[in-house]
Image (cartoon, rainbow, N blue to C red):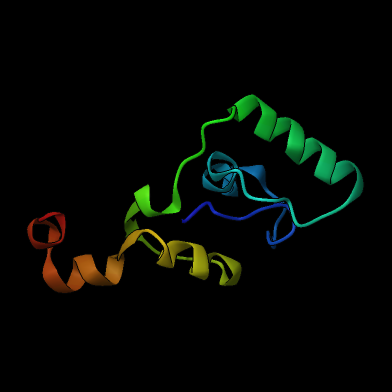
Length: 92
């Protein structure tokens, strides 16, 4: 999974689908208490943020609709690539 969902984009609202978004300091996309909780999490992450272009996903599949744009900013090697070209070629 890409794990670039936010509270405003997640279809399941599971926090385990949001760690990359939190590391990147993405906005919550919601208001009220959920936004406050997200901002508290971002405060715990700290001031240094993970740049989208410094993210690589290997063996990616099951990307949520809202995550597709975020994965385009990094390097996404999908399971389709691995199945088609093999592990050695995709690692290289």
